[in-house]
Figure (cartoon, helix red, strand yellow):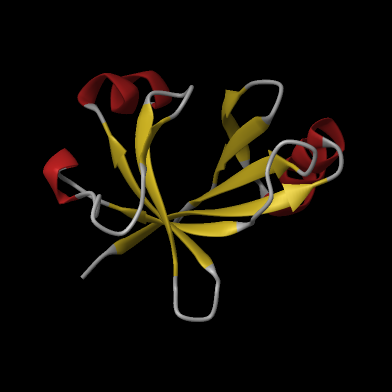
Length: 111
């Protein structure tokens, strides 16, 4: 059984959305760049993704071992934050990302 790692939502303005999630949900920023912010919550993370750079919101499912990324279903992508993902569509066109964290990435994000 997989664990939900994050929920990625499309936003118009990263800064405004960051402040909203901090003030209204108690989220804490753990990674940020010009296209994406990762906000830690008690039971998961929210990825705020800039609508100008990304097409799809998605659900991220944690993969413990790199070799378990489903490369037969989609392309393996190395992310700027050090994670590795594989994006696939479910039968209804919803996007699911299978995501793996290297040990270094876990230390950097304090996961």
